[in-house]
Length: 311
Image 1: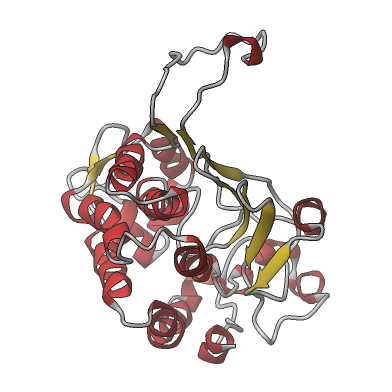
Image 2 (image 1 turned 90 degrees about the vertical axis):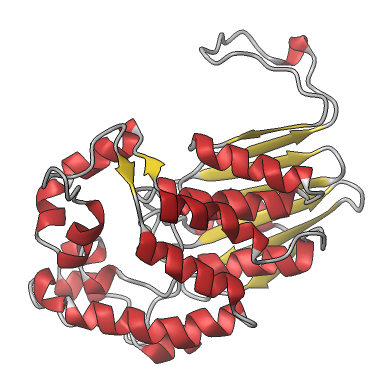
């Protein structure tokens, strides 16, 4: 589950008098602040907070040299006539570019990129987390906020971590909340997508990387190395992040395949009602897995239930 929580102060700064679509009603404390931005010259601006990424699409007129400031970036300066996609994962930038070339808009492209990044940078984000999304339409001069933050289980209570120990807020079953990320993507697609791209199409790039593999980045390799003892002690993590050819965590430049995740993404992409499928069908598997692995978390009893997903 994602640990990129965003607190009340960010929501207050972003929402103001804008329209709020709430898909979560319980918020966890702030640990970090991550942003995802999309800018499109044809009328949409989108900011995602809380998913641990950086993403941008620029469409149309470029900024003049005078607005670049005095900072000299190590990155090469590019001039683009139509658009540019910038992400934390190079393969995902190409996937976002394809969606734009197929007449998708910023929302379509962003969803495809976020799904991809959940595959290639799992140390930072994924469908097990949540997001706060702010969309600004320059044509109508209106803003929309989608609150797709994680929701605490019904059995959680205010002083739970004080009573159970603070380590349970970041480690183990008690740290797990009901994910909101997919719900947020679905709202983006239904309410702000172009209508030119099918829901299933947005998943194709991520599924392809799951099935054929992707090159492990330095950041992912470092994260795995730092947590390798932790990974070895947990059956499911070991099956994903231990290279069968070396018996060690995956290293930079190695190819990682995530076929099980690919099957999950494909099922979600093909579901007639993705939200119902995820929160009612897949939730049973998720909760069973949490209960099954509880013994690997100092036998801490999980409190999350299938009913929490349905709420």
